[in-house]
Image (cartoon, rainbow, N blue to C red):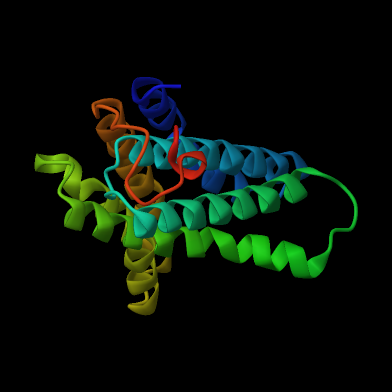
Length: 194
């Protein structure tokens, strides 16, 4: 897949986290399954964005950028496992479920690091360079509003803000040319196509 396709998928899937939140506000069993499925769809879009960022080398070249990319993929995969467990019936390993559940906020924190790397690398210019860090502050904004006593406003803003920011992230990826597949000092098998 090229960045145009990855970015388009991110844009198309960007509203699904807000829709998942809306579905989870109902107490029905179907709504819980719909929420899990929509959350999984959002993670697929986020995964596409992460791949596009890496293919554009928006976080820079070298081992740090590669390491953060791998960490982000691991966290997104673990968060996706939590969504899959919510879809499937039966008892689940509670320790693994909690680890997977904690991967959601950890992924948001990782997005802050991705945003800082994008700013430092200066590969993306103009508005695009600010989008990843703005995605990364989604969760801190929510927690700030909750701490100030605005839980409902924080949840509503989280839904709308995540939709807009991930759509912009998808647009930034979609408009990004792809960088060379190999990097100095990084084995070809780790960097090719990533």
